[in-house]
Image (cartoon, rainbow over all chains, first blue to last red; front, side, top):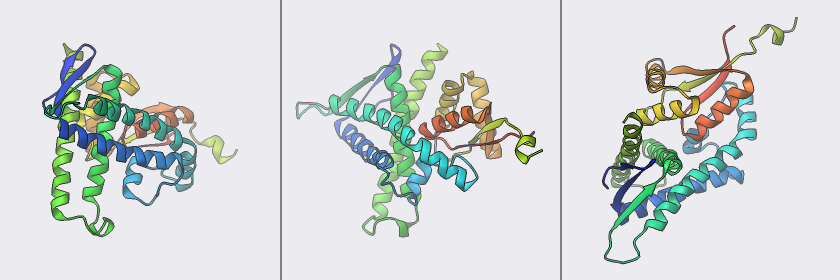
Length: 172
Length: 85
């Protein structure tokens, strides 16, 4: 993965096909979480859901009412951003087998969707790796956790350099 | 006079400190969502980090609910509460 560079009102970068594939897979998993909110099948006690859909009020009754009225719209908006990133990644995947680099380019609107989507992927992974081992599936090993930490760092690089590319343009 | 009439009708949107989200992203969100300049957005981000929370907007309850929903959609931790009279 190379850092994003400003292009037009957006930015462009290149990453390995396997990186793009991994990010698309993570994005699709997060899409499933938002879909569950819209379908009202999400598990509220899941710490990931508690972080993605936090209480809006200190008062439990007000928080529940806000969640009932607003979480569907919030989930829908998030699915749009995440879908944008997943589709950008999928449509950039190389068609030739020996081509292992993916080039991505986003306009200002796309960059905004990507920033939100990348932040969400990072949040979800962070909550999962920081979670009590007792709450994770039994087959999750220390190696798995270490790998996920590397992925969190990598997603942070993708999001951080995209912000730098956009900010540099606004300052210049 | 009822309790309601004595309470403030002004509500505040509170941004909470968040150890996961990248700081430049928080600044980006505050600039875009509230039309703040970079210096002010950075100041509010730092305030939230130092105090655990920062008031980023205030006004009607409906308005603050929209702000909180937007901030949640951006992945940030936010709540609304009645402003101190």
